Image (cartoon, rainbow, N blue to C red; front, side, top):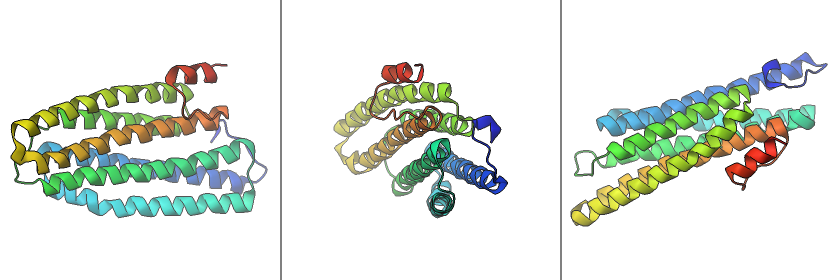
Length: 235
C-alpha cells in the first residue's frame, strides 16, 4: 500500500481491507483483459469454441463486480473513510463498473464470431488491429491503476484518440464492403457492432485513467480535453 501513497492507519485491519479490495480489482482486471484477448483471438482464428468460452466466463466477471462492490459498501459503512481513503473506495467502485462493461464488450465481440461463423464477411484485419490496440490500452490502464501512476494515466487517456481514428477507418471500410455486396449487410453489421464494442473499451479505459487522477490529485477531470487535463494536474 505504501507505493500508492495511501495513509497508514492505527487499525492494521483497515489497511488490510483496503489492500484486499485493491487486489480484488486487479484480479478482476486480469480476467477482463484475458476476456478481451481471447475475444480478439477468436476474431483472428474465427474460433467459435474460444468465443463461447468468452461468453461463458462473463458470469465470473459479473460476480467479481458484485463481491467487490459489496466489500466497498461494507468499508464505507464500517470505517467511514475520509479524504484519500474515501477517494480510493470511490475510484474502485467506479473502476469495477467500467471493467464489468468491458467484459460485456468482449462478450459482444465473441457473439459476432459465433453468429457469423461460416458466413461471408469482410476482411477482419483492420478490426483485429484495432482490437489489439484496445487490449494494449486496457493493459496499460490496469498497470497504471496498480501503481496509481498519474503520468501514465494522462498518456493513456490521450491515446484513445488513436482508437477513435481507427474505428472511423474501420467503419468506412465496412460501409464500402456492404455497398459492394448488399447480401453481406446482415453479417457486416454484426462486425460493425463488434468494432463499436472495441471502441467503447477505449472509452472505458479513459474513465479508469480519470479515476486514477481523481484518487491521486483529488481532481475530477471528466469532460475536459487532454491539454486541459495536463495543465490541471501539473498545477
